[in-house]
Image (cartoon, rainbow, N blue to C red; front, top):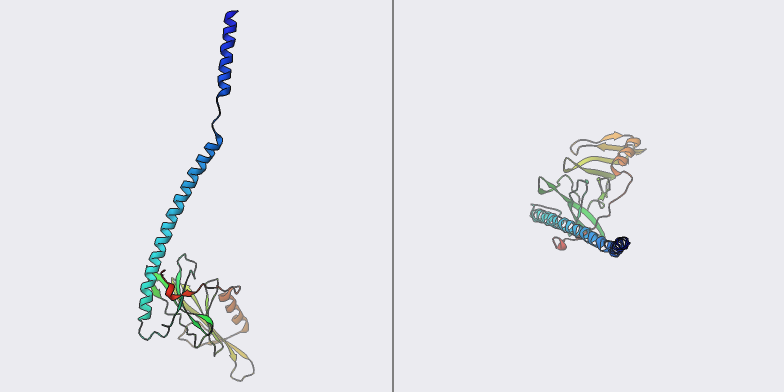
Length: 227
């Protein structure tokens, strides 16, 4: 009988010991896990920030050199630029450097630089002046429209193989007999324009302007560049 009582007593002690053992503190484990995740995220953010800063510094250096060259161009008629902005026109992940000038209360895009083979290059095919053109429009589909103030003529530009190139000219004017509107087009600057139909005229506008959404460029004073 004494042996039975002893065995029961031992079993009770074992059960009591098991009950008094606390399970792992789940809240502590959770906090530790979250802390590790947070540390990892902060590390990733830090590395991303370093890469972004490095890329920006490189970009600023490239465009600073290009800007100096721009103002030293012989006979540069557009050296009056007083604003700039950075915008990825063709959606390739690299921002182009746009120069603008404030003219009669409006901002005019007058020059575009793009990175080609690691070097900032002035896109010479696109030229405009606030004295003879309305402010150029940059559409969200990557097209640039230059509208002449005096003549009913528009030019369209797009990036092609990494370069901003002239694409086409459209004109709507009176016919030689002044009895109707004549629509004309040319796809090279050095060729004569040809007569086209109103349907083709409208189709080309739709092709280059898409749904008409224009980019609102964030112009900043050129004096702030590189800060």
